[in-house]
Length: 130
Image (tube, rainbow, N blue to C red; front, side):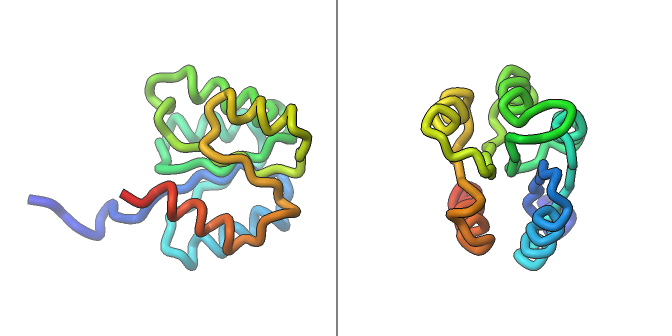
């Protein structure tokens, strides 16, 4: 027997240290019926990812305590979190940064200035589509 409604919401972890941006994304994701967890630094992001095992992680790169590349690397090395799709959402747009993020296992690399929140949400939905 399957119980519906109890755990049917997709869980998103947003790791973002800009409180304005984080608030905006949390609001938008909640409106789209996602369950959102928020971390404002890399270490907390890593901890929350291991505790909650979200369906997808939106990860900034420039973060206090541990940068997004290190968080990504550690998540992909851990068998428990390795399969979680991770979208890097950052202002770093250099080709070497994009290449590094994708090489470390990110599912996508979005430059904040180039994507509206609705476009980011569309990408999330596409990745999470069964």
